[in-house]
Amino acid sequence: MKAVTGNTRTWLVVVSILVVMAGHSSAFYGRGSDVIQLKSQKDITALTNSKFAWFIELYREGCGYCQQLTPEYNKAATKLRKLVRVAAVDVEKNRDIAQKIMSMYNFQVKGVPTLIALKPRTKKGDGTSKERIDYNGERKAGAISKFALNLMPDYSRLVTKASFPGFQSKSELPKALLFTDKSSSPPIFKALSTKYKDRMTFGYVQKSNKDLAKLFGVTEFPAVYVIKKGDTIEQGGSAEPVPFTGGKPSFMALDVFLMDYAEPKQNKKSSSSQSKSKSSTSKKPTPTKKPAKATTKKAAFKKPIMPQPKDKIKLAGTDLNKLKLKQLRGILARWDDKCSGCMEKFHFVDRINELRKLHGDLDDDVAEPASAKKDTAADEGMCSGPPETSKDEDIKRLEAEVASLKKSNEELKAKLDTCSASKPKDEL
Image (tube, rainbow, N blue to C red; front, side, top):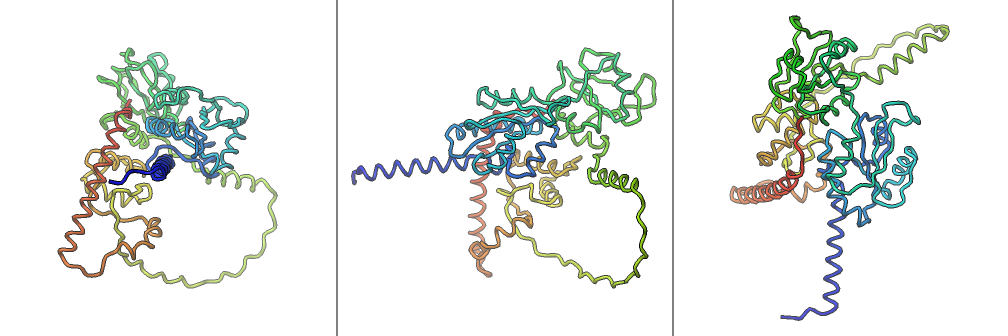
């Protein structure tokens, strides 16, 4: 056996370092991470218009401290999902976006990683919609999550027997009422009150208030009820509250329940057009011109759309957010799951991810989204087999694919098992 020379040993060390660096560089917030990447003006607009609290990391991929923070930051983002918006911006790759955030919230990055929180203002301040709070605490998922949860806006109010009549009469909006054994409104209810702000009124009743619990027929805690718009709940009255009966009150389940009773979202485009029309009517009328002769054109004949053959990809590795609702429903149908109450796209995606954790990925094919066809078109010549193959070759190829899928499923389950230990229950 040949001895390892000095040069060989040096090369082995260099290769090991390069492998470690490559592993770290790919460990930043890519596909599957709950961290929002701030890369464009569209992301900045979403940040400024958001009613939620934000937690932002300004980092650089070549920074060793940033690499150490990445796994903890990913865990914190998963814990805070749907409650606080957790984001990150690369100060080198997206320098303009980083500069804009620093200018908007009046601070400078002196070193990376820099962590800041943005708390929504409840009163008018310096013109910005959020207040910047620097984070100098422990760089662990638990500490970051605890700090961020304390910054959540809360648009729910404590309801007692004495304040209940005022709670019903103060607003004409529909109302959501939580009966809880906690001393304050839990994070999920705070997040829902933020999402449905100006569309529904939120209140919570403590367990010690037995009179209201009796009025609503509450026997177990927590319990959620909706008072429909225009209804008044009183002893001996005809109106009755609507109870939540969807099982454990998670964010997704309550979101689906409340959206059926909340006021619809205001369309910004229609409101702006209405304001323009009002301003235009206030101006002096301009002299009208004679209408031009109408020219009639024959309607262009449209060819009927013929069904096209569907491209096939495996569910493992597929970005569910790129699929259409029809495709997502098709995936759920293979588990015999109708996702009852699912309305928005992310509800279907969340439900599929829950089933994947329980049962693993399906071995069936799903239709590939049109956006992914461009990426795979160049590889079709390499990946596709000959037009005619024997049955033995087809069987061998399918067995190899099944073995590969099983291996990837086992790796995914192992990762999920490690993550689930730190993930909190998404319940009230």
